Image (cartoon, rainbow, N blue to C red):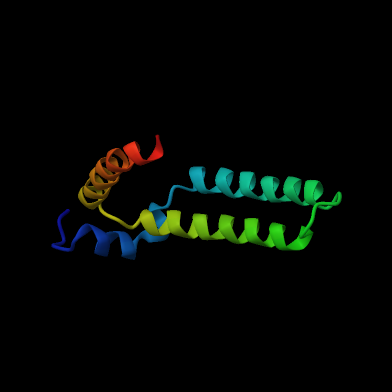
Length: 97
């Protein structure tokens, strides 16, 4: 059934139907377990206790949000980004050694 709309328009209309919940639920569960464990470790006397926990929680939320945004990108665009990252990683390789 071709409605003449691009893939991103179709995905936007059916985004919540297209999300893979079998992947989202374990990611959220592991993130919450990680933050809970980090809270237990940092609360034993590390410096900047609540600040480091808030930074990690913010980074986890930002990462999940970015992953959900990336889900909206079309496949051919992702291939272009992948090749660009692949080439740039080899360009930066001599700098690391």
